[in-house]
View (cartoon, each protein chain N blue to C red):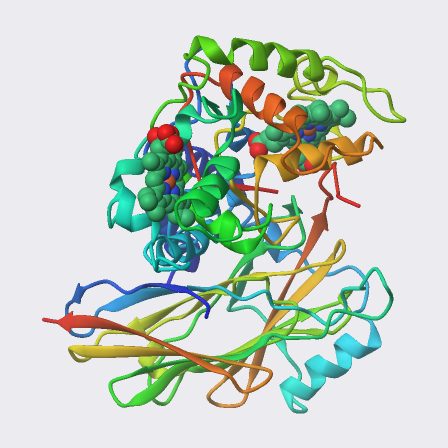
Length: 106
Length: 261
Length: 153
């Protein structure tokens, strides 16, 4: 099981633009790394990241092997409603990892 | 906006960031942590706990700390406290003298001993993910505390052994650690600056490794760099070098998890 | 909106170095290799990218290509009718031209993304942004990737 660090400001004014920062543990194995005994370390990367807030996917990313190990993605969102923000990462093999954070909108 | 004015703002910002960093990296006597030799980008990565990948390893260590294992179903937390707060400052005085062994033991060795003697399990392998996670968790508890290794007089022999190794020329390049890290610190080797080799950030997340690694791994890397056969993990020589380096850094603040290029 | 000022403010808040804001806008000297061009054309969907409005902020000198911090921001009101729909990053010298794509919308409030990428070599990086009206904006940056001294093995 991998770990993730999520930064969401606990409180924001309605309409305020907030910054979200995410860091998730993953080797992002490119598939281009040679093995000492020949061949390559099989590729295993996070393919997709999405952020779901107030009923919709508000930000998403498609990742390729050129994204650094332990993908770090920061972006901005407009605070609209108090509640949960869901973060989801999906790897090459379809494994899904989810993380939640809450925000209070005043 | 001219780029000149911009860089003035930048420098001001970085100085602000540096002084507010969790641990100031200068001892005040001219000794400089490897942190100060890094680019502003890499420093920023270390400074921000939300951006430092080493913090993911701290989290992993926290999980292992309280996970029951072994025939007795014990965890580290059972003896050392649930949140590990009893470990505050501990890593800043390692390697420490081990009475039973009659020689210095480093943090990896100490954790392996606790695994074998108290959890009754096969100790985690050197440089394995679980061992590094526990080391990083424990050493993070010492972040900001000052290195005291070497205060114990029983360590002086080990420190002298380490000092001897530090001055020994190794490998096909016939270079000693001291020639690079004492005589040429601050100069460049290729494009990489040569740091003073202070061990205050370990285990570190090294960008080159793309993961967390120990001080022994870092020292072995330098030995490979001079084309010497590196000492095996856990070797007395590596522990003596760790001991010498920690004593040499006495008074400097711990930074774990450090980030290095 | 003044994106340079925005970036500088962030920098003061977090200490994150947007060192070369001015320099990073240098145009690439040579044309990108064919596979990078193909990938960029495919993204642009037949529209010719225009320069301007995209700010690609990446250090000109990188200590280790395994983790290169990068920020892209696009000047846009980010409303229902006028926003950035997608941002894509392309490499000229990596094994694959695609680096990452980010889907945005009006609910982002600002078209701003920060991530860390791998670069095997000194090269030029391209950022393309597709707007809600289908137009495409572009920026590129050259950077020098250095190597650490003692590599294992």
